[in-house]
Amino acid sequence: MKSSKFKGWLYLLPAILFLGIFMVYPLIDVMIYSVEEGYNFVSQTSDGYGLFNYSYVLHDPYFLQAVKNTFLIVVITVPLSTGFALLVALALNSIQKLRNLFQTVYFLPYVTNTLAVGLVFMILFKPTAYTDGMVNLLIQFFGGEGVDFIEGPYWAKMFVMCFYTIWVVLPFKVLILTSALASVNQDYYNAAKIDGTSKGRIFRRITLPMISPMLFYLIITGFIGAFKAYSDEVALFGTDLNGAGMNTIVGYVYDMLYGTAGGYPSYASAAAIILFVIVLTITCINLMVSKKTVHY
Amino acid sequence: MRSDTQKTYAEIERSARTRRRIGKILTYTFLVFWGLMVLFPFYWMVLTSFKSTGAYNAEFVPKFYTLSPTLENYAEAFTAVPLAKYFLNTVIFTLATTGIMLVVIILAAYAFAKLEFKGKNLVFTLFLALMMIPGELVVITNYVTITNWNMRNTFWGLILPSVTSVFYIYLLKENFAQVSDDLYKAARIDGCTDLGFLLKVMVPICRPTIVTVIILKVIECWNSYVWPRLITTDQNYFLVSNGIQQIRESGFGRDNIPAMMAAVVVISVPLVVLFLIFHKKIMEGVSRGGTKG
Image (cartoon, rainbow over all chains, first blue to last red; front, top):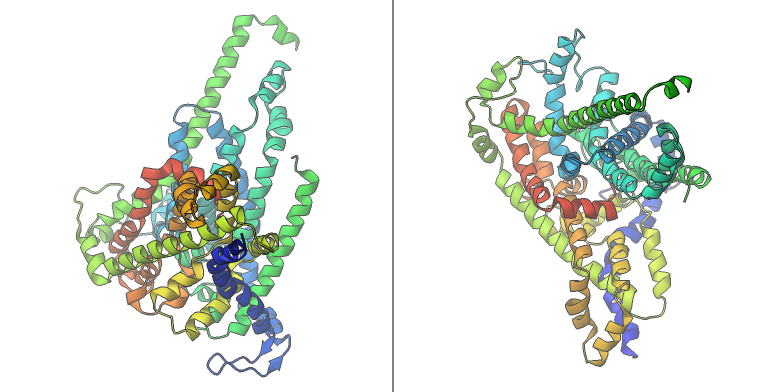
């Protein structure tokens, strides 16, 4: 049995090696980067240590714009997508015929390349020299005034951004909520029916508490996901997100690292750590709220 | 309450039925509406890809059908940029990453589930702690590491950072742990080696979980964009996501939208086909172990 002592480590070796090089080491390294001042990527030297990188990032108008955009996306899309997903899941749960078909169709966006489908959204929303675009024609048909959703005013860009984000995240949420609803014990509903409980009351007193763990799971992962928004923005507005005024925090990190304004791993690190702190804080708040309200 | 008691039973029954029917109609209308919202972009992309460029540009009000479908956009998409090459790169990247990852995580999950060694629980806890680390935090150093190793614009540079996943190790370990220890002891007494037991007994028993992991990883690989964008500047190593982005920004996507849509259709087809075949499996897998959004 002596050999098995090493055998365990031997089996773990590849995982430890890869995690060590690409997870643990970078984690330490990124903290060092973020406090190295005047780091030069080519010579890999720095002037010393300090908090200048953080102060630079926090005063960078592009970063502040990115923070504003990210918070707007989070605040708008998380409640809307979760609420709408709940509505869809409730509707799905109340029917028998065609339920599987609807479920399958609703899930389709999950498996598609968001970058590719984002381009379809772009051409639907964007006026060109030849056409005002599908959506604008619809708006004009109902008597409204068309607007360039891709290169136009900020609110229009934010609208299409949030709309697309919700479209992308909905499949996952609908799937989770539909299975959560289906797993609620039918006895509760039957008992409530015999007691003549109203539908609203059944929803508030039975359905909501029973699915609340899943609902909170979705809200927490939704927050985390929305804070990391990036490739959906690229799909709609292209890689020059700063130019479009639609950058996100993650986008800022990547732009600092690479791209036209790139080559500043120190600034990128500082921004990434700021993002991590924000996400951690919000997640902790979420967990605290859920402890108080979720019924397990 | 009084008016209710004055109604006959048949009246109450009838009004309840009408209400139920209206509710049902409303529910179905809502579901069909959202179904159309989901499918419309897909329909639009396929439709546009079959319209000729001239016809597309001539339609101020876009038509919802085309009477003269053409394949010229597909020809254009494949010749104007090395789309077939991007496609092949993505297939290689997806298969290699998934394959290597499977070896790594199966070995690790087995060690955690069945082997006894000092420090196992501590290592497992450390592994779980790593799950909280967002990829955005480590991508910076990984970019520098890969650059220092001269692995930019190589397949290894694309593949190596994404061949482990703590989450999948955890998922698989839970499943492995359910396999009875008696089976393990019996096999050992019969002279079966650990590796033999793993390959001949554990993997077949836990196949459903492994298939789930494979499917999730394949989807992730096919759609990955950020890391490949950082690490490849040479078109010969572009993946489909980077290819499509480049087409849009500096390629023919600027003025030839039907051709761009043809490219979009081409890169979307593999996963949609995969989904149509395995939709049950995929949806099961995602509800068990997926995170997104």
